[in-house]
Image 1 (cartoon, rainbow, N blue to C red):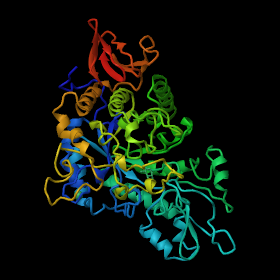
Image 2 (cartoon, rainbow, N blue to C red):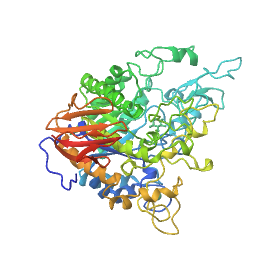
Image 3 (cartoon, rainbow, N blue to C red):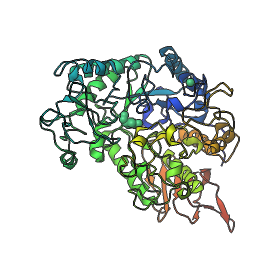
Length: 571
Ligand code: NOJ
Ligand code: CA
């Protein structure tokens, strides 16, 4: 059951292949919460550089960094003031270059986040738009409209923004601008050629600095077609999402990505991209993943699925079909900075009246702590992770999940930062409940110390920008490194083994071993992954067990897979 050495694999896609991304394990860093080198309480680029050995030992192929650009942090950095600079609290462009060199030196690729649906209200062009008259070229880069009512005193439409509150906000001269998200995030007008040129400049800027790929925020919303008379919110919601919807997933958004694709392909190897597009219809999602478009798209189906054999199988089968449609590889995600950590989701009891289903709730709807079974949550999370890591395609991990971190629910209201929280009231819940801060609390590196090793161990160091709970120490990297049974040890072994799992992007369901709560599949080369989603132990098939998410149990001389457990076998 122990694996100490990664053998070179005949299957592994060579690191210098242009196809490196197809089955990569990508580790998401939320830069302000990863490691704080200078002790100001905010994670920084120097902190990331100091932890590259950790990432290498973990065995990830690439790092995706959430936004690190100058920002007032109205939305955790997704409100970008300047797309071609670094937040001075986080670092400098020189530091960024050092980071790229250090990651590449360790054989790790770098993906950065591009936020093209909206800028921040502090972006130079939005400020110019505010200081320019109605109808000016500067205003045309964003989406300004006159209001309704006798004096334009009413918003142009009754739309609600994604985090709650109105989607149209009035400026001093009486006009209104559209913001799909927070009021500080005005939407760009992608009908304006300046906007196209600006983003191409930005993509080249980072690609020239050695960035290997891009994660495209809200990739399905850039193109809009707003008639003179705007539809009401109810009308908008009733319109089919068939490519002609005025706001989302329009067919012509692909024209933007065709333009970007040319830029990506100027580089050797071509720069990669992955779309963040919450598009339900798999066939429409496949458009973003086509080689003429962004090349890959996140699927969030697994993170929204119930922890049961039938749901997981359905999701996997549908997404492998979707990958076949686009020619891309599948993507798998269980956690990210927008959802409740999966170690908590899987431990939540069903909530009365909640839209959520047992174990699948993707935002924590203010669940009281006594409804959370920490042990069950972690056990299922580890099982789901081993299942995920055995699948063909690429896996996107979120910082801290390799420690089995649970969502932090005990953040005082006055320390919260997420606009989702500020718009959430018992009467109006936009994404539900507490918002996303609980998944963004700075990482514990040591069992003790002023910020559990996130910042320097010195009395002068500022506390972590989001408060860490007292139970964080037991999940720290240093504590788990010493523990054979820890979640960190499991992730390290899984990633080392996975190097040998990367074969053809196919799997075969093992019907004879599957049924009821058990789901099993094999990958080329004789690798078996079997998950017991239920409570009763299940038999271990013949073969060599390589890894188990929880220890096997023994009954009458034979080994059994206990409930909520995944095993990997050589068969
Ligand atoms: C998706 C990002 O992941 C999320 O954090 C952000 O709030 C929205 N897009 C808006 O940029
Ligand atoms: Ca810092």
